[in-house]
Each structure stands twice: as structure tokens, then as C-alpha cells.
Image (cartoon, rainbow over all chains, first blue to last red; front, side):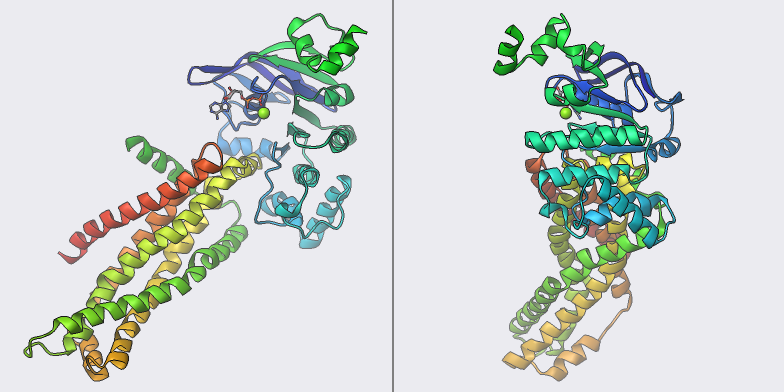
Length: 249
Length: 244
Ligand SMILES: Nc1ncnc2c1ncn2[C@@H]1O[C@H](COP(=O)(O)OP(=O)(O)O)[C@@H](O)[C@H]1O
Ligand SMILES: [Mg+2]
């Protein structure tokens, strides 16, 4: 379980996160939803320590991550996999080398063992025969899948995904969502996913936290979200013309 | 200016750490020696030959008194090439070529979150990305500059072959005359300092990019401008320190 206790974060006068306390549970896909610019990415980067919180603390299974030094954090970082919005694959490395990278840095496995692990991960994301391609040669959906394979190569306990299906067509987006959910359940990871896509919410939202103007506005799951009387959440959920009409029916 | 220097120092403190894994560092070092060093040899050779040739033509044309021996051409070419043209001018050229490359490579990694990805994996990105580049340049630029001296002096000699303004014998006598080995040491000290300036300044510019593609372009320009300014400044300081 990952937990934040009263965390706040500002950039100058811009108070992006205000006093957020939230829990993300093991074996579940925990979604953070909210409009673009509401602070989802900043929250996620605070969780993993890419931003330092101004106040409050972040705990990974009761280990206080916020109070740790760079070297102490290293141990927890090895248990973290993260999928970035644009994939963040290393341009100069092939698909195989990208997925192998954490193994090379942190294990003493032989080339064969590493290759076996890489192929296992690429298999999981349904990417075969792409080992020798470079990121520039991949489609958007493939980039996301390689990035997922890299994120899970060290068999992490915590998986973070920032807008995993942004820039993808609805079908591919659905495939990626499904993949994240299956991985989470199979390997009992604590998964946190940022999204503004209602399709993902309905499909994989075991636990949903709605961020509104930097505050935690609502919490619940995918079945509760359609029947809430919270005004701001309703505005977010039923934002498109189609959903507004459906709501009236 | 002060904040820029502060930022430079802070990032440098993260650069000079023990690499996470030595084998990985060694591979990176070889790649960087290839990218930053070997790749620059072509342009360095061309520029050096022409520089040496121009210095020797200039000197030859300007000797119009019969009291000045033609061996002066070789002597002047040697002194100019070793003391300034190779270490300083070639380093300025490398500031343009290597500096912009480093800043845009690292800057692009910053804006596409590749640096965040390294950090998440528990890797120290400043060390992982910048340290091999600094090491490669500090180790390999002296080789480049020595070669450049060779090319420069060859360029000077070619003038005698093509123009007959002076003889090969004059030129070689000039090259050999009044030689002080310390000039080479002096040139190499400058080279190493300049190599450090170029790679560290450009690395920091790339590393601290915020924003998108336009910001990467700006960082790459700033890297070249600041490296060049610092080379000129340190050239003055080192010359004063080492030759006085
Ligand atoms: N590194 C940063 N420096 C300053 N402001 C930032 C930074 N990152 C994000 N912000 C600001 O924080 C707010 C929330 O951004 P973000 O978390 O990216 O939103 P989103 O919910 O779309 O992911 C925005 O107003 C953005 O301008
Ligand atoms: Mg975002």
C-alpha cells in the first residue's frame, strides 16, 4: 500500500497540491482522475520523489519515503516501475536494450538470463520480433507497451502510469488498460494510474480518486462514480455531449 | 550569472560521484570517445592543415628584409600552431561541434522524461549522462590536439611544396630551431581545461532544460556561447599563469 499524509506542493505562487491524504491499495488499479492541469502528474511525481513535497509525507508500505536520502531511496526505487506519458524510452537503445537496462544496472545476471527475462516481459505485452527496433521505429501503442515491459522488468511491487493511453486510438487504449489491470492482479502490484479518460475509469477503476483544483475532491470506485451527486465530479464525468444526453435518459 | 554558476556547481556535485556500475561506465566512455572524439577528427584535420598553411604563407610574404632568414617561417608556424591555433582555435571549433551535440542530446532526454526515467530507476542521471562525456573529452582531446599540431605543421610545409616561397630545408630548420618542450605541456594543459569547460558547461545546460523543443535549441546555443566565452577567458588566465 502507498499512502500520502497531508502532502502539499507549490511552484512559486501556484499551489498545485493542497493537503492531500490518499491511499492506494495493493493488487488494485488505483486511478487518479481530474481535468488537464489539475495536478495529477505533479501528485504522481511527488509519490515517486521526482518532486519533493513541501509538506506531509509519502509512505510505501509504512516506510517513510519522504524522509529518506538519495541512497536510502534507491532500495525503494528498485521496487518501482513507472510508465511515463510519452514512454520515455532511451532513444539510443533498441527495444531489447531498453527493457534490459534496469537488469544491467542492478543485477549480475548473465546475458542469457537477461534475454530470457526481456522476452518474458515483451511476451506479456504482446510484442514479439520487435527486439532490435529503435524507439523511433515504433508506433505509439508499441512505445507504451515497450515502456510497460521496461517498467516491469525488475518485477516491481509498485507500478505508476502517467496517462497510459494518451495519444492512442480507443481500441489500443483499451488494450493498454486491460494489460495494466492484468499485470496488477497477476503480480499483486500496487498500481497508480493517472487518467482523464472516462473509458479507463469505467473499465479498470478499482479505486478512483478525483482531484479538483489541487484538492482531493471525491473517492470511490467505478460503480459509484456514475451515481454521485458531487457537482464537480458530475461535470467531469458527463463532460461530452454524448454522455450528457445519455445521463438525461 | 550568480544563479547560473550556483546551478553549475550543484549539478557538478552530482556528476562527480562513483558511477553506479563500472562496466556500464566503461562502455559509455568508449561510446563517447567515439561520438565526441573520433567523429571530430575529420573536421579538425581539414581546419588544421589550412590554418598551418595560412600562417606560413602570411609569414613568408611578410619577410621582405634579407636580414631575416627564411627559417623564420617554420619557427613562426610552429610557435603559433602549438601555442594558440591548435589548443585554442580547435577547442573553440569543438565547443561548437561537441557542445551543441551534448546540450541537445541531454536536453532532449530531459524534455522527453528520459532523465526522470533514469532517476526513477534509482540511477544518478547527472553522473550517468555527463561524467562519461567529461572523461572522454579530458582523455581524448589531448590526442586530437596533438594530431591537429601535426596536421598544422604539415599544412605549413605544403606551402613550400606548392608555392616555392621557401624550401623544405628552410622550413624544417625553422621547426627545429629554438624549441622549448614546455610549450607542448602548456598547450596540453590548456586543452584539458578547455575540454572540461566545454563538456561540463554543455552538460549542465542540457541537464537543466525546462519545457520543449525550442528550449532545447536555446540551451544548445547557450552551451556553445558560454563554452566559447569561458575558453577565451581561461586562455588568458592560463597563459598569464603558465608563461609568466
Ligand atoms: N515543474 C513545474 N514547475 C512549475 N509548475 C509546474 C511544474 N509541473 C507542473 N506545474 C504546474 O502544476 C499544475 C498541474 O500540472 P500537472 O500536474 O502536469 O497537471 P495534469 O493534471 O494535467 O497532469 C499546472 O498548473 C502546471 O503549470
Ligand atoms: Mg499530466
